[in-house]
Amino acid sequence: LQRMAGELRGAGVKRVNISLDSLRPRRFRQLTRHGCLEQVIAGIDAAIAAGFQEVRINAVILKGRNDDEVLDLVDFACRRGIDIAFIEEMPLGRIVEHDRALSLASSAELRASIGQRYQLAPLGDPAGNAGPARYYSLSGQRSRVGFISPHSSNFCHLCNRVRVTVEGRLLLCLGNEHSVDLRAVLRNPRYTLTDLKREIVAAMAIKPERHHFDLAGEPEIVRFMNTTGG
Image (tube, rainbow, N blue to C red; front, side):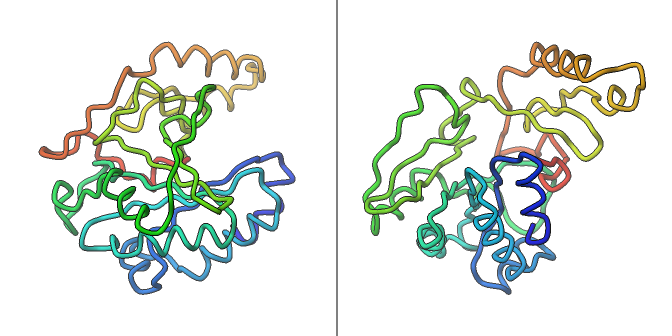
């Protein structure tokens, strides 16, 4: 991102989300398996300098692994004047590092922790532009803090998100495998941009009504987030 931020902004990208689960280099590397904290922070700063309309940090908090950094992460966002969103861990892919049910840090618990330092006030979203995130203002700060709660507060009825995977599939729900093959459309010389738009709009008719995440059982989706794409 540090290298590409300016080019992405010039191409018309308006907002970027960057995962940042820890501010401690060793812990960050353990959580991400290979990530370099210095590079990620440099990318965040480059995105801010590039002038994106919105730069947001995403953090997944796990009890016993990084729950002691919640306030540090909020402080980091506030110092840079950017938003931060805390996301309850979604059961995507099979893991052995921790028990998902025991490590889940709910949005309510995180709000209580942040409330020890900042006064939180809920922000309305009458247009539904925030999608699954519920945002709060922080007293005396430009930054907002958001909470995405797939377990403790189901948001499916408000979801307005789809994703494109690296294989060119339009994924309609993180918790389902319903998808549409856009790559075939893009590679067919007979198809135009109008045809592509038509395929995307038509796909909305099969967007699932809800996910079926279940912490107690095996995940139904074996796809990891890092293979899903944004």
